[in-house]
Each structure stands twice: as C-alpha cells, then as structure tokens.
Image (cartoon, rainbow, N blue to C red; front, side, top):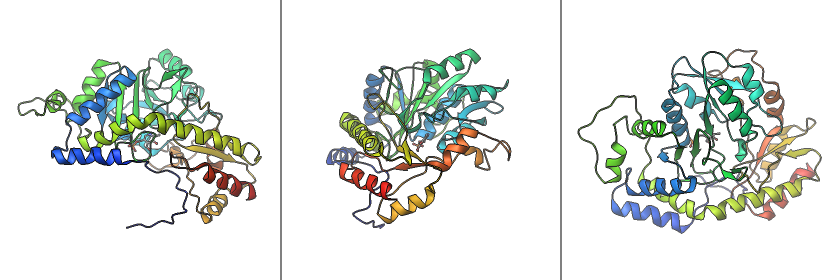
Amino acid sequence: MLSESPSLIRLSKSCLTDAEKQAVMAVLDREFLGMGQEVNLFEQELTSLFKRPVACVVNGTAALHLALQACGISRGDEVLVQSLTYVASFQSITATGATPIPCDIDPETLTLDWRDAEKRITSRTKAVMPVHYSGGVGKLDEIYDFASHYGLRVIEDAAHAFGTRYHGQLVGSFGDVTCFSFDGIKNLTSGEGGCIVSNDEEVMARVRDARLLGVEKDTEKRFQGQRSWDFNVTAQGWRYHMSDIMAAIGRVQLLRFPELAEKRQNLARYYDKKLTSLSLVTPLVHNYEEVVPHIYPICVANEISRDSLRQNLLNFGIQTGLHYQPNHHLSLFSPSSNYELPVTDQVYPTLMTLPLHPDVSTEQIDLISKKLSSY
Ligand SMILES: Cc1ncc(COP(=O)(O)O)c(C=O)c1O
C-alpha cells in the first residue's frame, strides 16, 4: 500500500462520505453490478438537471469517442481541437479514425481560439471540439457561430466543467453535444464514468446502442432487468456502458453537488484574493458566480523557473500539476516537427496548477501563498 505524509497537500483527490460507501454496499448486496436500475436512475436525474437526454458511459474519453462516432466522424475527417488539453481529447478523435487538428488558445481563457481554428479548416473538417479548460468555457457563443458558419458539429469536451453556467445556463443544457467526465477527481465523480448530453435524438440513439457493443435497443432491456438474446447489430459498438456501482456513487455525489461546487468556487476565490498581491504569479481569471473550477492554474513570470518552483513547493509537501503538455508536441499528434502554436507554446512553459478539491482548507491556501511569495 502506498503511504503518504499526512501533511501532504494533494493536488486533487476524490472527496467521499459514508453515503457513497453505503450506496456502493447496497449495489453489492443486490449482486447485480452491471448496467441496471442505478444507471437508469442516474440518467433520469441527470436528464432532469440538464432538461435533455443523457447517456452514461464508462469514462469521459468514451463519451467523446461515442459522441464523435454518433455524429458520423470517421476516417479521413478532421476535428479542430485545442492542443492544450488532456491527451484524452486527442485520443477520442483518433479512435474514430479521424485526425485531430491542433489549434491555438485564447491567452486569457486558455480555451480554443476559433480565429486560429478557422485558418486550419479544410474540406475534410467536420467538427470542432472546444475544451472547457479548468471549468470555464471561454467565448463559447463565438465558437458556435463559427461552427454554424462552416457547418461543423460541435462536441464540447466539458470534462472539467460539470456545474459551470454560461450566461446563466448550465453547460450541457444547451448546444450540440456535450461530454462530461466523472473520474475520481472531477467536480462530480462516479469513480470512473462520464456522460453524453444532447437534444439530437438520432445521435443519442446511436450512442446508446454503441455503448453496448452496437446491440440495438439493449439499453431499454437492461433497464428492465433483462437483456437482448435475439438482436441485430448494424454499426461498430464498444463495451462502454456504465455499471450500477459507478452510478450509485454518482447519484450520491449529485445530491452533494451544490456543496461540492460551492467549496470549489470559494476556494478558488480565496486563492485569487491571496495571490493578487504576488506580482510573479498570475491566476487564470474566472467569474466564480458561473464557473465551477476543476483545477486552479496559474502562470509564473518568465524570470521564475516553473520546475524549480514546483520542486520547492513539493519540498514543503505541496503537490502541483501541469495541465497539460501540448498535444502537438506528442509524436502521434504532431502534424509536423515545425508546427507552431505561438500562444500555447508561450503559455505552457509558465503554466502550473495548485491544489484544488473540496477538502483543501483555507489554512492550506494560506501556506501555499506564503511559500509562493517567499520563493
Ligand atoms: C480535458 C479532458 N478531456 C477528457 C478527459 C477524459 O475523461 P476520462 O478520464 O473520464 O476518460 C479528461 C480527463 O481527465 C480531461 O481532463
């Protein structure tokens, strides 16, 4: 078993109570662990939250992969996506056979710069994947206008943005197709997990079949405690459905969500307040009335070595992270060795993330700020 110092301030972690544990035990007691009544109820609860159909799956990467496939994205197609994202966004695109086209970011929000994306459009471009980096959605209206101008599908990678509002509307309750991740450290967790939300009934029907190996209409059977024995398959599917164990955790987290979201927002506000006096670090600015932050990124001034600062913080038990190594530098996704994304390449070497999860205390943020200022 891994042991860790009790004073370690973790970058991120799952925040669970006895209620999640009891919910899992109740599923184990029923001895039905697959996709059944818990997933059905979790989907219903999420549907009433978003006022749109929802399909739960095994993780956020699978959600993106299924969403792209259901929108007809396949080999030979291109998808515009910001390079500064987790490799999952890129892998979900290559999983369909399509090519991810790395794009630059808006330096203020670190979300997709559609003006840069526009320069990269070809006759093969079929979709754009805005990534709601750290929980903020950037200028999402403009991205939708851009997509509609060029007839592109929009698959929102909202892995970081569960609970965020945009112009007062919950992310997932508007737009084309939105995908969330419920992995262990996300704003809401189901252990692993994710979901697809869309008003496009054809897309949702394809997603529901494809998550169960393409077995047509198997979802309805499973929700009635049955399964299909006599069935047809007309499209490639995957074993991507959610299990009742995961849904049980997710349902409790959904009940706790207002408290979890408020804690994240208040901690980020507290960081903002503590860090304003430090001239050498600049937090990413969000309106925490709307944004529920998943991570807390800062940029350090050029005269500071980010990596030595991170090591120094770690020496005091403060974990930090790098979100994310730009994908256009990874061998699989690099269109060419001299592919340039000036903003991404300028921002990334200065970017790091500080601990953020609902169990971080204000005293810990006081300590982190003190260590940053004394560095
Ligand atoms: C931006 C982004 N997209 C997609 C994913 C994929 O989600 P999952 O880990 O649930 O597959 C993640 C997960 O960390 C992410 O950060």
